[in-house]
Length: 297
Ligand code: GDP
Image (cartoon, rainbow, N blue to C red; front, top):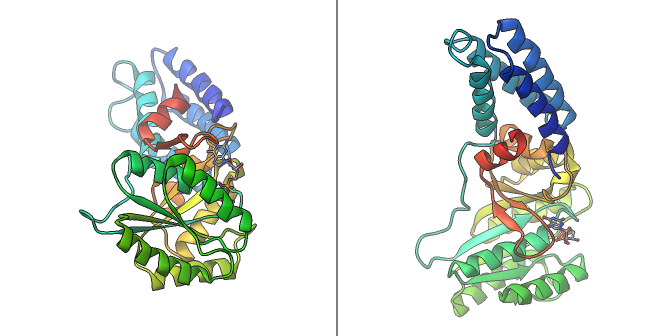
């Protein structure tokens, strides 16, 4: 299970805090040293950990926490609040254009992150909400990706626009918007090409698509299992292409959790959804409070 080790360690620290009737500043500092170690072992970004510990410590030894009733419980509450804040506090929706205006959503990510699957998952959710999505196969470098999108599109009952693998992704994107206009689709989801690593061609292509069609939301898909690489990828995509939010896949695996805890703080962009399995219904909106509860128990 994701976060297993982190969760276990933090619960150990909390148990210790709860068992003490009184707490001194040194007790809090010692507990925070353990929290810090647990977060670093969970692969949370170093700077994020530093800021987090500082905020908790300032609040915990300040105010009247230590002299109040149940100081251990108060410190635990502060850790929970700061952890939620780290991930953005509240759930963030993907922004849509009002009424029946077409919203174009560009989906980006490295190969294998789960982008094509996530495109179909997202389209399926919009369809269930009464929207009329269109999936668009812009990944022309991996012919299997087109087929995969078609198969998944069919499973969720969403049409897939493709022009094969001989056309330029920008032209496909443009043509898909015309197709959407003619066919009454109000959400266009562009499945763009991934690469094994970040490369200039991929970035240039995404920037070009954003320039030439009226992309309203750019969403990056990252794989939770890749830990801090996912965070670095998010930072780079945000700086070079500009993103509005992130979807973290494979949170059903035994990820240590570092990416989910770091991305918001490092990029300033919210986590929108989490992928919780290979099935097309396994996509959940991201609630920082629920995630915190999963970690802290
Ligand atoms: P792409 O190259 O980024 O388009 O990645 P794909 O959509 O082809 O996904 C790569 C693999 O990851 C596939 O085997 C998917 O079934 C799997 N996958 C995608 N999302 C999830 C998820 O949330 N959980 C799990 N366990 N597997 C996922």
